[in-house]
Amino acid sequence: MRIKKMLPALTLSMTLMLAGTGMVHASLEKPDIYVNNQKLDISAGMGSAGVTYVPFRPIFEKFNMKVTWDKDKKSVTATNGSTTIVLTHNSYEAYVNGKKIKLIAPPFLDPTDGLFNVNLRFIAETLGAKVTWSKKGNDAVIYIEDSNINKIK
Image (cartoon, rainbow, N blue to C red; front, side):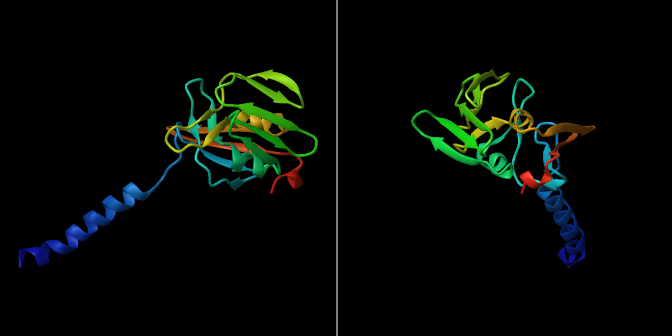
């Protein structure tokens, strides 16, 4: 009898608990990313140097770049016809159209999921896009705007 009286309260409590744990909010450590006001369905994470890292393939493909992965060198090459970017695991050197560029933080292979992660700002700005952060409290959103909207899917 007591259980029947408590059932509505228990159901409401469980629903609220589950709803709270299932909600994902942007944070300073895991910001949401928008390209030309379209939210990307990728996970981002912050590195120790304040760099936002994302898996390489989705961001390069968003910029219509063809990507190849060299498993022996642990490097990625991305090209779109006018720009070629080469990044290597744990290297502070990137190559853009053959020119060596010093990175503030190296790309890396994530040991938990095996994905190769790259510096979001470096990629976007190298391809001519504007990157801005929007912070409010502990939430953060990264906006990437490309003036040539036809370049981006």
